Image (cartoon, rainbow, N blue to C red):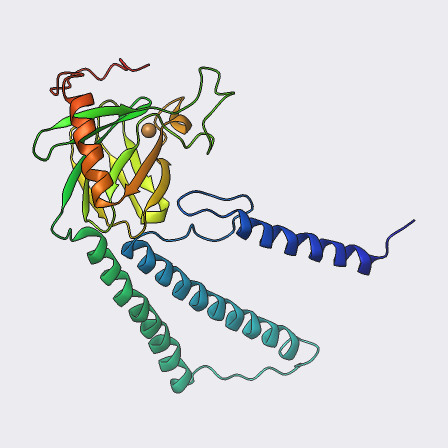
Length: 282
Ligand SMILES: [Cu+2]
């Protein structure tokens, strides 16, 4: 049986709608979802603002594109040689010239103001409740908690050697997660031990390079408990795709408990003066 064009289109529409709702149904906070076409659900104030700014730009660019398209179509239809055999010889129109200079300026200003506000929000660190230093290594992360009683640990992809068996979510889970308390300002300092890496967690709206010999800073304040995943976002070598970031956001009590345990487990585990970056963990 041959399907008509209409039937086929209807089929595509139904499949598309099913995928979209399906994608939404799979969506879990803090990680990508199958067929996701939007940004990950926000987990911080910064990401709320990024989302708002993204939507503003999307509206602006859509309106501008449609406007230009309408102008082009008008010109093509109304002023082609056949429809308009004797063209006007007008060379100036002061009103239009002022308008096409001023309106784009106003549009750019309306983008610049929230853009700078967002930049300041991201770069002007509020007073931090705790600090975590993330050191990118080929190909895993080392996290240091320098506040009273420094300790540090390595965080490796939770997969077997062949990466056939992994803890879900696949290629995002790690053996030792970053643990942070909910609703607390976390300052993240990043550096690289070998090459440039980048520390990125989409739900928190953070992405910052981890550069050898430099210390970069960003911050987040997780608004809900749960797991949040990110990945190294700078091509850093053959296992670049296999050094995910996992942040576990817990309540204050859970954090205090974890802190005591972690200090015991990790403080004595190694010398905190970590000069060796030659992948002892692999
Ligand atoms: Cu990397």
